[in-house]
Length: 131
Image (cartoon, rainbow, N blue to C red; front, side, top):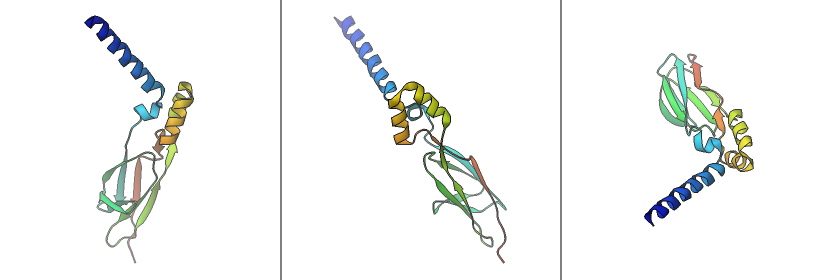
C-alpha cells in the first residue's frame, strides 16, 4: 500500500509541475528579475540619481527592473547636471517562445511585463563645467 501512495504522490507532483509550466510564460519563469546597467562619467566621481534617488558615485553599476523606465542624472559640484533616460522594450525572443507555448503564456508575460528588457546596458555622461 505504501508503494501505491508514493506513486500517486509522484504522479500528482508531475501533474502539478506540468500545470505550473503550461500556465506561466517563459519570461516569467526564466527571465531575469533585475538587469545591470553600468553608469560612468567623465570626470568620474559624479553622483548618480535614478528617478530622483541617489544611488552611488560613478563608476557605478545600477541593478534595475527591466520592465520599468528610468531617468538617470549625473551631478557633480562645479559641473552641469546631465540626464539620460533608460527605456524598457519587449524582448522578441520571449515573445516567440510564448507564442510557441500558446495563448496563456503570451497573456501572462504581457500582463506582468516579464518579457521586457532595458534598451541599454550602460549610460555615460560627459560632464561640462559650469560657467
